[in-house]
Amino acid sequence: MDEYDASTYGDRVADVYDDWYAGGGPLGDASGAVSFLRELAGPGPALELGIGTGRIALPLAEAGVEVHGIDASEGMVRKLRGKTGGDRIPVTIADFRDFDLGTRFRLVYVVFNTFFGLLTQDDQVACFRSVAANLTDDGAFVMEAFIPDLTRFDRGQRVGAIDVGGEAVRLDVTMHDAIEQRSDSNHVVIREDGIRLYPVRVRYAYMSELDLMARLAGMRLRERWADWDRSTLSTGSQGHISVWELVP
Image (cartoon, rainbow, N blue to C red; front, side, top):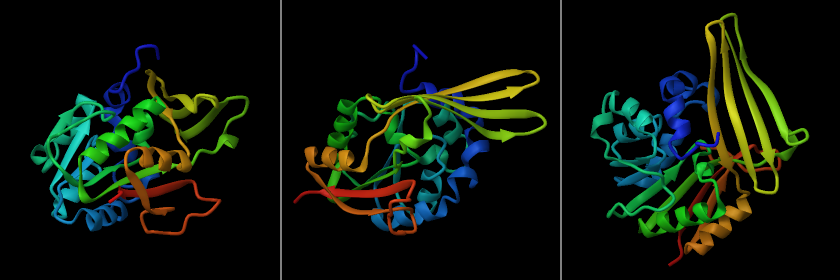
C-alpha cells in the first residue's frame, strides 16, 4: 500500500460501502446516532468529518439539522450525491486534518473510527485544533471510536473471516505495529471471478490520549458513553462516544 493516501479507502470501497454498512449490519441502526447528534446540534449547522455516502448525514438533515461535510474521497461523495437529498448537503473535498470552512458549527462529529484515518499524532492534534477553531462557543465535538484491544493480535497480525458464502468469502487481514499505534489492513473478497482488495490504514489512539489532544486544542471532555444510547462505559466496552467542548 505504498500509494495509500487519504482518499484510497473511500475510493476503493465506495461501490460496496452501502451494501456492507448502510441500513444496519455491523454498524447497527443509524437512528441512535442521529438522535444523539440532533440533540447536540439543535438547528445546526453541523459538520461531519468523513461524510462518506451519507449514512448519518442524510437522516440527520432529514431531522431538520443543517449538515455540511468534508471527505477526501470523490467516489464516496458521488454516492452521496446520487441519493435523495444528497445534492443539498455542502461537501468540501479534502482531508480533515487542517481545515477552515469559514463557518462556525454548533456540532462537529466523526463516526465509525474515521478519525483514526489520520495516520500521525501530529495530524490528529491538528484536526482537534481545526475543530476547535470552527466550533461555536457553545458547540461540541463528538467522536465514535473503538477502544484499542491489543489482545486481538497474535505476533502483530490477525486474520478474521467476515463472511463465508457459496459465492464469495470475505476476510480481514491485518498487520499491527504497537510502537506506532498503527494497523495496515486489507478487506479481501474472494470470488470465482477474481479477488478484490480494500485496503485501510489507521493510527488508533487511547481515550486518555484523545483527551490530551483536546486539551492542547483548548477543549475539555463533557461526557463519554459506551454507545449512542448513553449506556455506561465499562472495562468490557469495545468502543466509546466522546463529547468535547471548548474551555470558556
